[in-house]
Image (cartoon, rainbow, N blue to C red; front, side, top):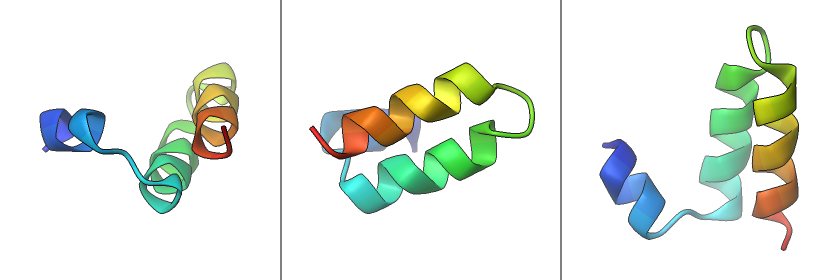
Length: 38
C-alpha cells in the first residue's frame, strides 16, 4: 500500500498519514502536512 501512496500521494492521503504519524513522530507528521500543500 505504501508504494501505491508514494507513487501518487494526494493531499488527503498525506494528511491522513500525518495524523497516523503524529502520536509517535511529530516532525514526520509536519513534513507530510507540508508536502500535502506544495
